[in-house]
Amino acid sequence: MSETTVVCLGDSITRGQVSVPYVDLLRSRFPEHRIVNAGVNYDLAYNALGRLEQVIAERPDVVTVLLGTNDANATLSERNRRMMTRTRKLPTRPTAQWFRENLEAIVTRLGAETGARIALLGLPVIGEELDSEPLRRAGEYSGIVREVAAAHDCAYLPLHERQVEYLRATGHRPGTRYRDGMLLSSTAATQHFVLRREFDAISAGRGLLLSTDTVHQNSTGARMIAELIAEFVEVG
Image 1 (cartoon, rainbow, N blue to C red):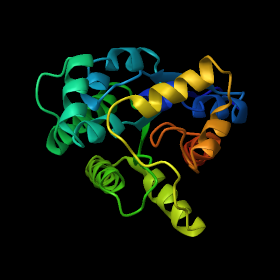
Image 2: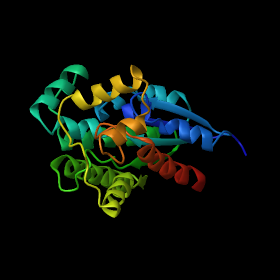
Image 3: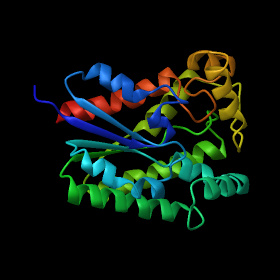
Image 4: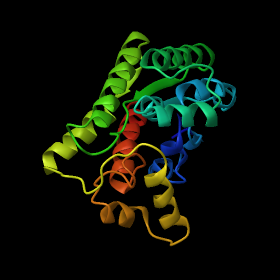
């Protein structure tokens, strides 16, 4: 089988430093392929659009795009908006429409300059309470991703739907609720890098099934991402 170059474009969930690295799972599954991690911590779609040259330079056969969590998170509180605007040097207030415009620009340019097969993933859940505003917001942004994929003849990989179905099937009541700001993610990072706790142990200790901090993925969440991408890669 000839080598296929797969570029995974995304944010910290793709980068895999503070989240179980789904890109590594893909590398284990496809040792014959070249899997490129193009994840950058804190990125919104706007930031990813600004670094597409790096993706195009890889001459990819397949590009997967997992973006939107930070875009959605930035709209959940004024605190989050200020933090994202400052750290990622955003030129305007984050909105759903701005996310759509940036995602469409990403897909348009990738399609024009790479010829790669492109798959857009829905967002992972934000928080694990099914009736919560953060999870609803992730669903709304996943709807945008699905619409952009349809409009640009790309594949849509239903990560959000799969994670919501999983939470519903388990009857899960999370032990930790979503909070704005960085407290949950920073304390998870401290537990992992300083206390050497595994991500799954952090997740279990917080009563979470898919994430360590209501955003970043444990091994269950990461496997769902890897499985969806693997199915797409194999179809080609």
